Image (cartoon, rainbow, N blue to C red; front, side, top):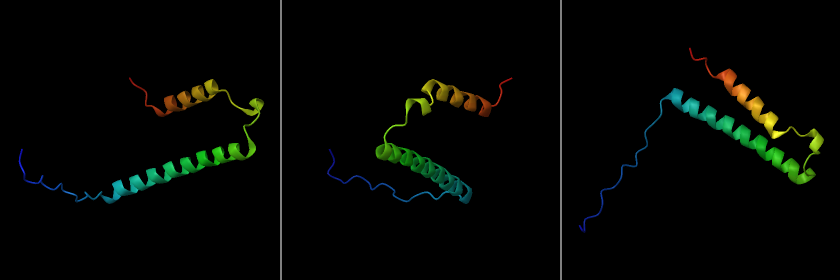
Length: 78
């Protein structure tokens, strides 16, 4: 084995072009908003307890709604 130190890694960051930087910031803002909404729901549950079952939507229904939303967003394949 060699006693020479390993070469230092290049720590220079690669800059994004302005459009890519804006897209990353927009994604971060959407992610932050979703996390804030989720945290709000959890805080409400912690403060007030779980909602009555009658007011809840079954997960199967939520799943089907989400799958339908994804299908509408997907372009049709010829």
